[in-house]
Structures are given as C-alpha cells and as structure tokens.
Length: 119
Image (cartoon, rainbow, N blue to C red; front, side, top):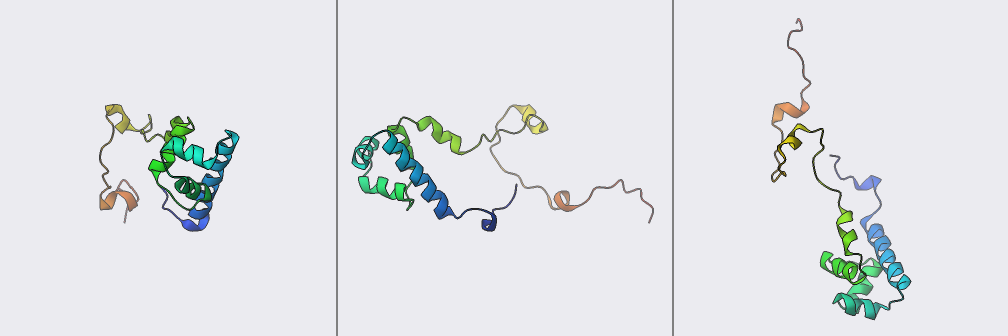
C-alpha cells in the first residue's frame, strides 16, 4: 500500500471545499434553505454552513445531512470494500480479518534465491 504523499494530492482544504460545494448544490437542487435542511438533519444552521463552506464538521453531521436528504445509503460508498481478493489464499478461510500482522524482518526486503549459486 503506498504511503501518503501530500505532494501528489490536492490539499485537504480543497477536498473539503469541493465536498461542501456538492452538499450545497444538492441542497439547492432539492429547493431547501440551510435552516430547513439543518432542522431536518437535527443540526444547527451554522454547522451546515460550515460544512458547505468546507470549514470542518463531523462525520455525524455529514451522516445526518445525508439521511435528511435521503441519500444515506451513499455514505458507505466513501470507503471501498475491504474484503481480500478471491485470488489471495487467505480468503479461502471465509473469515474476516480482525488483526494486522506485519511481515517479519527478512521476508519483505530480501530477494529470494535457490542458494545453489556458486560463490
């Protein structure tokens, strides 16, 4: 899995701003005022305004807004399914992984050989 490298990605502030704009556009397309959606979602209007401005918020607030807009089923689409590949032999057990185990020191970095090469 690649490590997070902020140099090749958009800044988080830009992503949050884009998300806020999408929330605002969706709200407007449903002909709802901020106060109306906030009341439906059970949050304050200022919380909704902060989310729409991309200035922060919580997952709880986002989930409440999506529920009020009747699109809460899309919330789980934010993260991909974490099931292992059917080609991975560990998938044969049928059990979901519950722990992370790091490989031992010699396994990851060493190149494998038959050890029958002449010196």
